[in-house]
Image (cartoon, rainbow over all chains, first blue to last red; front, side):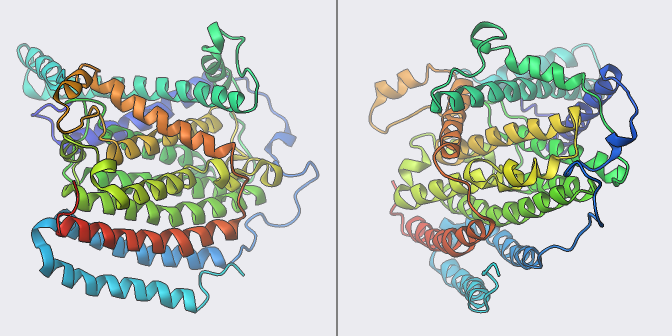
Length: 122
Length: 358
């Protein structure tokens, strides 16, 4: 569906609007067609049947946070590799050496995290 | 092979003949939106039916067979049922974030959907960084899931969302790295360009060993990314009710359901694009007449066929492997897939630089 006169940005916006439109339209339809009944019990959290005890925004394991930080680090490094990957054939040996240094640092980061026990789920 | 850009150019020229440029562009955008919406909805309905039938076959059942011939209308019936259910508003939720989450989940899958190469000249967005854009938009989905779990004010949803978040961001690394491996081989990030590079031979054949390793890793990571199969512990029904979407009712829940099936299609579609040539027919160098016969099968059928076959493998996983524990999932990714992927990337780079591929 590539027409020469429409820019990719316009098309991306059109696709995004389509997605938003789909949700809005379906929710509007559901609101129109669905029944509306009121019952104070309906607004409660769906947990066990008995009233919920304590805050739901409970404490959670710090391990999730650690993995999020590790992800951030590796993902950013992965993004840096993309522009080089496109030109890998043209850059040849010289590019290989310079990226090898960067790559070693990346692997050292992983080794460090591993040795420090950041990858263990304790 | 029929080139669909002839059709789109004809529509464009036809519209330009009786309206100004800006109006023609607007009309085309509306048309594209309508086509996108139709294909999106139909594929989701087909996938729901397909998965239920395949699951049934694995368990020696019949699956849906009452509504319509062979149960074909079952997913339409489900959709209408979901539309006429009440949208329950809860007492202690964060109203704004609770309403925002389904938008983000659908937005992510819709944008990724628009980048896929459907056929010869039948691709909506063709950025020169297409595959990169695809990875970027598919990570919006994680945000939607985290928001859904957080804003519901429910312990089950919170745990489900955190598990899902940790799992999806971890496996995104593997997806990113195996895509990177294939980008090295292709030498371009544009989706159209990657398909064009596979004109003579699909990457799974031309990249031999590293491409096969990358494909296996991609398949595992893609299964985890869609919260399916053995990696479905964010919505482990025996421990967390339904995970992050426990509190959503009616059509609100329907969006998560829809996006899950569409993500299955998108993951298989990207696998088809990277490893099996997108819409490109099976070509074997030297077999001229064979290649010629393959060209007669329309490109759209090639693409959707490949995606459906890869989805079958992903559904197969679900009924073969038992559900993993969260620490096993994370150690599988960080201690096995990630190092293997890094070594595989080095291998692929050496092969590309020294020209050892076919």
